Length: 76
Image 1 (cartoon, rainbow, N blue to C red):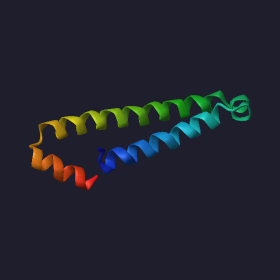
Image 2: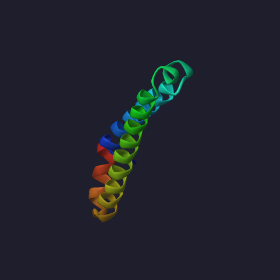
Image 3: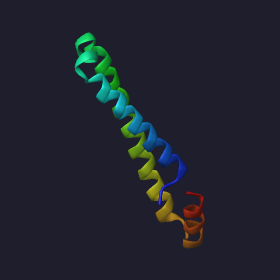
């Protein structure tokens, strides 16, 4: 059970990972290693944002009373 923000951050992470993998392709990498490095930084930022939000979601879900947890689950 994940919230809409988690899903959005996961989509962002997957898109950023795809861009990073494209940047590592032989064509891009030969042209600019700086481009690949900047995409790696973006990938790590997306990963950190996702992990931080998921940790916060777990705290909220675990601290909420059961009826509130059920309501939060329906919003997802």
